[in-house]
Image 1 (cartoon, one colour):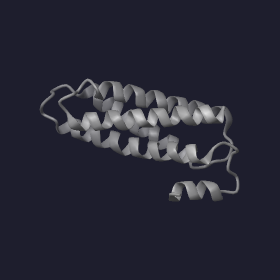
Image 2: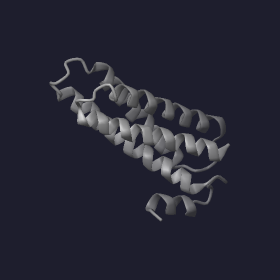
Image 3: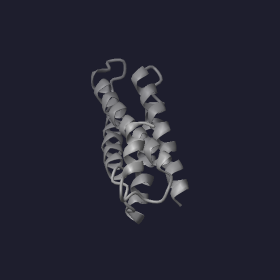
Image 4: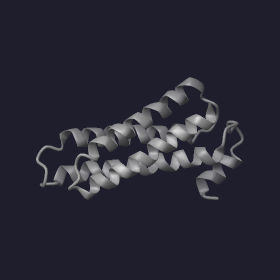
Length: 132
């Protein structure tokens, strides 16, 4: 059991849903936030494609939303509708970021970002499914 899963299992006000899925979602959000931010930075200096503005914007939006989602999920008390909407938003942001990054097939950093965002999107959807 990793540290996030341990903290969730030991938290006195944890919600009743699957803490394993919750830990996966938190980890996926943290990873997607970091990778998306790095992708935006790489896009800024990537001279192989002159117009990376949309990719950078989606990378930065995804990083911000994933960070906020990880922070809220790390406070595992029941959060109701706001919590669900945040997870849905995170999944959508990851989907949009991945779709844009997938159009930049020559950029390895974009391909890594797309894969990471797809995993985060799935983790958010899986958590929503078990929490329903």
